[in-house]
Length: 139
Image (cartoon, rainbow, N blue to C red; front, side, top):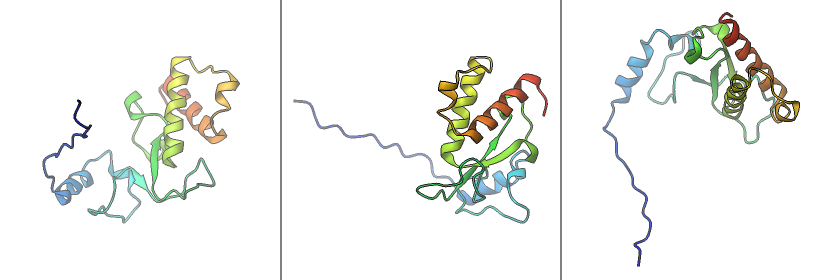
């Protein structure tokens, strides 16, 4: 007889949160995501998150309490870390934009409408803009 399944819980080394947030405050390419005058505290989730409204979806059920700052031209693809290259989106929109951008990159920017229509209009617009910026390597 097999023993019952018991999930393994890994305990990571204890991290001093204040020290971590102090390090995040001093990283040059992350400081642009903080609104002017806002300081990180131990209660903040991450410097790339914000309470600004989502630009993709006008209605959220349940209400989105924390939104993400998305780089239209991804940093991993050579995009700049500037305010002109970021938009605020909800976690769902953020995941959808990345999924669509990945598909656009795999298919050279051409997807059938039957696939595109599965994404919100604003998600398509942001993903297409990101794809265009990656292709021309410029804002």
